Image 1 (cartoon, rainbow, N blue to C red):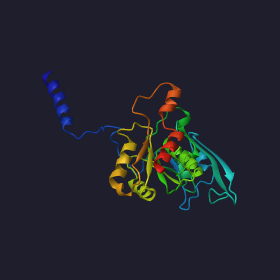
Image 2: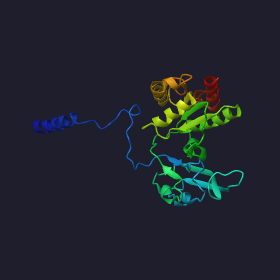
Image 3: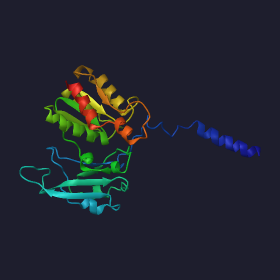
Image 4: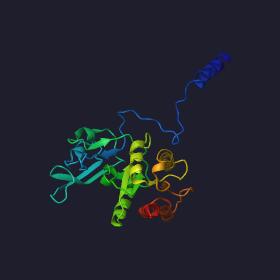
Amino acid sequence: MVTEIMKGLATTLKHAFQPRITIEYPEETRTVRPRFKGRHVLKRYENGLEKCIGCSLCAAACPADAIFVEASENTNAVRYSPGERYASVYEINMLRCIFCGYCEDACPTEAIVLEHDYELSYYDRESAIYVKDRLLVPSVEGSDITLIGTGYTTLLCKEAAELLDAEGYSAEVIDLLSVSPVDEETILESVKKTRKVLIVDEDYPRCSMATDIAALVAEQAFDDLDAPPRRVTPPHTSVPYSRPCEALYVPDRAKVVEADLEVIE
């Protein structure tokens, strides 16, 4: 009996002084391996044209039938890709996707890439279907304000940028793609150009991605700012169960545009 107790204590003491394996997620995030396959991204050429030509080889290679592609013809007046066709519809069902990377291997133009973003969460099933606007690397460049988002909030930033363009303002949209590591160089370069920044996040206003980016900008680009960094986040309260109340709780396009105009003007 005593022998068994001593063996158990020896095992406990052996592991007590070893480095801990677990981390305090989400406050701490683990750096993924270079070959890690995370969220899909549709790439562009340096001139801004889309690499995807709508060939549907990625959809044919997908063993989970998670990809849907619909092609359309380019015209001389409106051109989206260098080839004759482009993907007018590109959808990935993340609930089906097994992140095997077969789509990436099958793509002849290296348009689809599995990046390192692994923080994929949804409020409903519709949000799990990533459409082209959420997958495509944004090419929106502007000079009046920098809009920063990640995942779904990037789509809000792009929609807000289009509305601001109608008002005569030029907004630059940054899709972070990954929150760890954060592309600090891109953020700081954009802020130094536009001199104003707005961060859109679905997390709380405290201890969140938006807070970290606002601190980064304030610490390293303070002299370049014409206005304090602005955040659009839910209030620091619990998520309501009622759907109408939830719609008031989470950021939306109207809230982003309203905050943009307040910062710019």
